[in-house]
View (cartoon, rainbow, N blue to C red):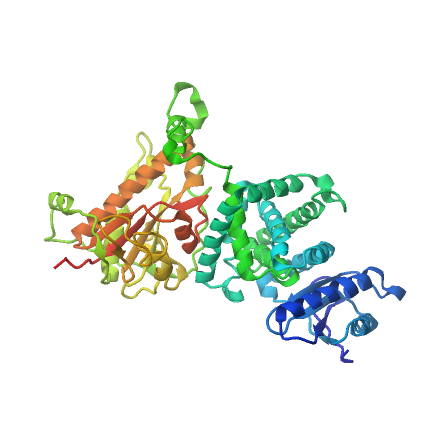
Length: 573
């Protein structure tokens, strides 16, 4: 062991954290060396920490690992005693041939955990969970076997993140967002993980539904926390995570975190799964999506075309009808306000202010536009100027005027299409592929400011093409009308419905109103695009969650309802 002592930093009162790096020699297979390090942790470090003689046992400690071609075990302990690290190093080097140790700086990216306060919450969680993590490593030695307990921990973490099934699903589907790119997980990797998760759930639906029920049961049974109790590890993890979530939420409210509490929470869960259990980022993304499906699924369903009274569309149609005695379920709630239940799409803070739309003169009249409107198949291409985009959005979805509530002096803003109670549960998200002066990326349209808010920069057209058989060049055309070639489509528009917000406001009629409003808005887009001399088409045959994932929409509180292409399609020869 190196004789040099390197003091780490401390995020709480008491001795500083220090780190002992452990490596093993022999072999070129990183996976085999990682298993050797697991043996060192289980067979040497854990017994030493549990019963070190002469007061050497640390009060607080936890272990992590590094991945790559040269994996290492990092033992972190809070200590001011040089002899603790020295004796642990001697014990390790004497326990296995080729085992070497060295004290290294205690390195933890505090910014990832929102600053010192959030980092202290993370450290306390890792110390608390250390024994269960090591037991999991001992009992589940292979990657395949380790995925199941990792799924339990991830489900318990989701259930602790807010309390409702909606909160849990939303957290799971946004879990990778804050750390994926920093850990080398690309958009294509996340897309593949979702695809694999959907296939994995269908193959083993009963098993994954049972897993979700088992975790829910353990999380709801505080008496199961004791060692040896059925579901004890899950119950303990849920309790620790609930406490961590509560502390982080309180810190955020008090202004003590430098990033949102939800992102810090995801970072500490990811660190536990990745750096302690050795779950890869791709496996974690796979599990997060698969578990979100399991929490949403209510079991096997009958074939749709069986057309019974229990069919989903028949049931909703009947149960959303107005009846005299259905009471509050069918009454609008005006106290909901404009924000409650809407998913926060988290704009980046970068805004594109659109120019004022100019009045067009000399164009076709209303009757001519109505008769000329077509859903155009073919190859979409061309560009939009900022002025053209401004015109399209203002007349399709922008604000029109203020309207006064009859019999009062109260006014409210209305848009160019009708909405029940002027609630406007539809938001327009778009992917700008070829708009002059606008960086490629996804944007949220703000009709009040007549501006675009950047949600995410980057070209997502290759992934968008794979979300629909109409667009995917790898599969045959579904119908005789042929494929849509959209690789160069300049503008994609996605009406996103805030479903939870609308149901809180309009009860059992809410989903009908969402669909009707989406139709109003889509017709506006078609007519204005036609008036401007552009081609357009709406696509309903797309994989919902594939598009939701690309736009960071959770698919539960908010969901994409339509995919719209607008551009230029050359006339056939």
